[in-house]
Each structure stands twice: as C-alpha cells, then as structure tokens.
Image (cartoon, rainbow, N blue to C red; front, side, top):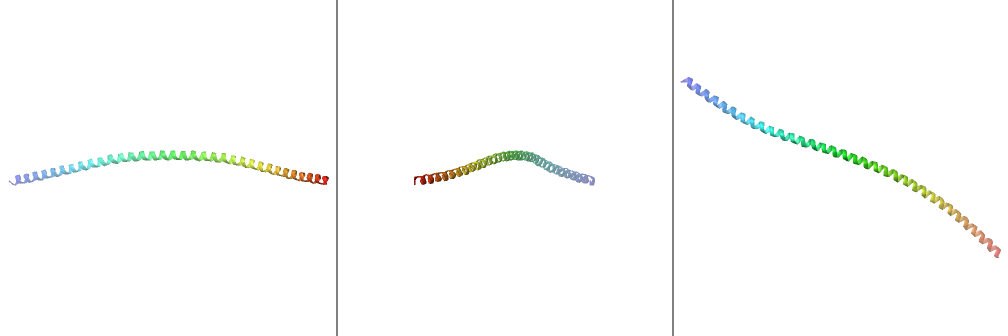
Length: 125
C-alpha cells in the first residue's frame, strides 16, 4: 500500500511538474512571439530610418550643389558688374575730361569775345 501511495504521490508530482512545464513553455512561447514581433517592428523602423537618412543625405547634397551653383552665378554676376562699373567710371572720366576741355574752350572763347568787344568798342569810340 505504501508503494501505491508513493507511486500515486510520484504520479501527482510528475503531473504537476508536467503542468508547470507546459505553463512555462506556453509563457516562453508567448514571450518569444512577443520578442519576434518587437524584432520585426525594430527591423522595419531601422529600414525606415535608413531610408530617411538616405533621403536627408540626398537632400543635403542637392542643397549643397544648388548653393554652389548660386554662389558661382553670383561670382559671375559680380565680375560682370565690376567690369561694367569700371567701364562706366572710364566713360564718366572721359566725359568729365571732355567737359573740362569744353569748359576751357568756352572760357577762352568768352575771353576772346570780350577782347573783341573791347577792341570794337575802342574803335567805335
């Protein structure tokens, strides 16, 4: 009878151990499924972030190219305007020199006219 009681007790312990092991296995399976899902989501997020970084790098490179082109355009425009400015300064100087020359001619003509007028006046008187 003791052997039967012992066998019955061992059988109950084995059943309890099996039930505990089944519960633990179910919990571990659930945890593994949950971790697999998190891993998948993490990989998807990583892929999304990789694409965002690629897009940002491309946008950055495009922006740098655009800024460099604009810089070169502005340098060219500045050179053209500087040349035009030099040309205009040269024209202004030539015009000022010509005006000065004409002004001298006018002064000389006035003096000559005054002398002629004085000479005519003295002849008349």
